[in-house]
Image (cartoon, rainbow, N blue to C red; front, side, top):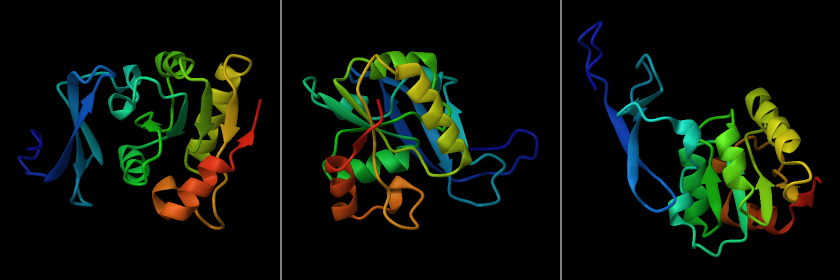
Length: 164
């Protein structure tokens, strides 16, 4: 990606984003260089708030979904064989909340930082009494789902505590 204001080329890892039916809707570029002005860049100017990243990879009959923030969190849990979707940031949208109501069980595993806690609280308020909500326990001193080992991720999935 070339920054039009400086002419600088920034290398990015490009990740496809698909609708639930598998149709490609956009691309996200994740900066590889720490000096890049933007960590993430949405190609094609698509609206991330209309999608749950990775939902296209879930079987149609999936009953439960683990909700994480980012694409790398999502990919890590895919690697472990867990039903996961990312809200592509820490601020969920109304549309994403509606999509989560399609599941019989929603397990929240947003990052354990200020932004993730704010997003978690928003989801709890929005989804309360609409879908059973659970909190995925985080292992000691871990604040991000992509830090989980295989065993920790599965223990969190199985040991999630009911919120509402």
